[in-house]
Length: 427
Image 1 (cartoon, rainbow, N blue to C red):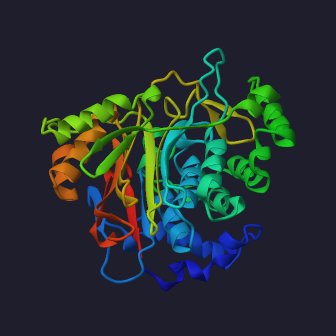
Image 2 (cartoon, rainbow, N blue to C red):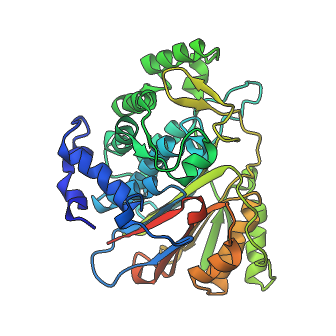
């Protein structure tokens, strides 16, 4: 890759987020496009994307997502010293720009995380479940504030800056974007100034950029113009919830899934059956659920995996005027459009597996892929050929056979490029 794509050449963008314009920022956008395979000289034509760590370089982590722009943002965050929590939040906010149909600011979802410093293994659930209302409170920003605050290294404004920049200066629409937005053609440049303004408010003010005080009043006013009613109390009182993940122990390892109350108990049961030898790995993935996801690990063994959903592409289709925010409907749990899984050796604090699935039978498909990678020991390309084929379901997995942080050379990743999946090893 061109040496200009070294993140050290553009520190002003991340480390001084109040600076705008100039050669360094244009260089950053070019690097995003190049590394995402959107510039001809840098791209690949594989129908799947998998990779291993290299023998040289200092391992900084792995990032995968259903959107190439988000993956490259995660890559640069890790490369510049951020951890998995910083990278996941920055990736999610980037997807709110580059894949707003499934991961817009109005999306709900769930993230699983492992913090090696605190030894916490938990799930962050962020759905507005108030089904008495027609429109849900935008959940993704507050969830990412909570996620990054839990264990991130960076300042919040640094984490938001990449998504704001991409919305303001434009990005090249890739396959996932155009699948849900028929008005946009592949490789068409998209700029979203209203969304950039919303992200700028979140960058500068954090939770007060949307949920409390002047930010809440501004959003309420814009919503009123769009014939949508939000009260200060609804915005203020919406909070993501940290919940214990459902777990299944086997051998020296423990597999963690979505909390039982939102649908993770069956996946846990299916995985134990797979460990016992029951074959549930036949057949291909079940197709897109209209959700999406990301996964990231860092050099110290920190890990985050998330799935997001607007319910339907662009949610209810209602956009709050002047904000770029599409609203979803309140969620009816259990959540069936996506699933996450994390495997750790709790005795020695090692990460073995991090994966998400965004298919119609997400829980079953998640176990299907994990079974092949972890239990049957198949290679990523074999798993893709047998399980994915031409499926349009999104998924991503990072598998470290001997565990992180001690053995990064044993890590592999796999994503589905049919839906724009892209992964990057950072070293």
